[in-house]
Image (cartoon, rainbow over all chains, first blue to last red):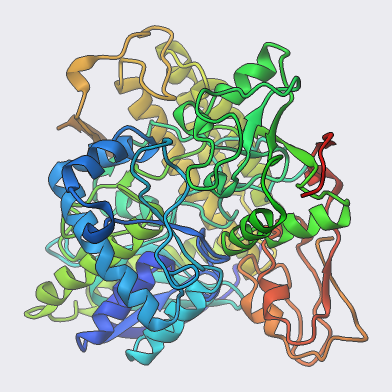
Length: 553
Length: 77
């Protein structure tokens, strides 16, 4: 067995954004506009990477002239799925966030992301009939192409096809750099940085896919493997609520985000609506039935009352054309291509919907404050951590750069010699993964992890199962470290991604065991009640040496 | 195999290879028709097709992601 040799390049930058999604690009654009030297690292290509890479069509925001009184606005928002996410960030954070969204809308419009429909701001979807409509429909299909262009215009350097894997700390425990690998060549990069923003998105994996025949068809791209969360955790940052799974519903088998873009009514096979909100399609509000309870469709399946259909009957041809336009802006071009190939015309055809499977959620992850600061000095987090969503990513990324600019003012680069031991450790790991003649493919490791997560920490949880599952997960994780094998740099990034996901899965088990109550999709058979004393509290975990320390606040 | 490249239309510019978020074209060489090395990793979001200047990319939708549907009695408006 001969280890593969990697070449190593060292670079310096004031502000390093790991992950070039909406958050990373917005952080970089803001940093660049303030004259900071800034680099964005992206595993793929910032023009199309991440959950927002192929577009979005709705952007939650508050515009005083349209929404009027903020108290009414926020009261309506808190009742829907965004409410849970906002609740854990706190009312002050929520207000600062919403007050900033309007600025972002105007900036995006100015840069070339069209935020208007027929010259007007048009709010629709994700809403209860008659109540506040908070989601601005926008033409986001090329949003990241535009943001990438804007970042470059502001002097930001974009380093595509490089995966950040490890945060390097200085002797005082401050974030001082990142070890990264090239996804196409046997090359590693060490970026010394005075401040670092993590925006690597909502991780996939941990749980098995709803569609067993298509393991890359997930609501978020397969290569989002929670790298930022795992490296933040290893660097001593706090993670939050990692045991609270997310759940989504949408078109059956063609697993995708974007439920609010559909303008039809969810009906059972007899034609009866399955929710109380709409009797006929209403493009302004959409059918929020599945948002009130994502398991509602599943309950039909489990009681043999399915299929459940998204039925657009009643929309005019013009309305349907507009809905298809929004589906395209949301990144669903292939779905529409499929409909065309199969002769599916939604004017007279209903498509089946299903509840997908559990996933690591947005609205959990790296804990950060109102300035996007983590508890590690010089380390910031943004995007699908905390609140998430497109506008959440845009605002938190922007704030991270504001805070980082102040922070770096009196900082120097760390001594390279101090960073070298960690760099050597990372190099050994990647060279071993690429040097093994025989071993486990990353997909084998992924399937093993998914089986364990689902069987022991899935829909129903209990202490004995969590304890036994964690013990087995750790054994498999240890064996994966010893045996994972990458055929080339592309597979190396997935091997590293799997090691990150194993770490996050362990965190999920630990936190699930500690949360002795049932809440949301976290269902404990040994603690079936919601513990009201935990309302409004967040659950944190951080590493203290090799020990995991958990707290509530 | 999700993206299918029409060799007659393809001008070997490599833009699809540059932009694919999943790098399914990994290993494709500059100046040659791109090869779909990792078809199972395709997210079916069409970054490649949107980027292609010659409309040379088609998709074969995998059988496992075909969407179930049913026709309804309805007058076309």
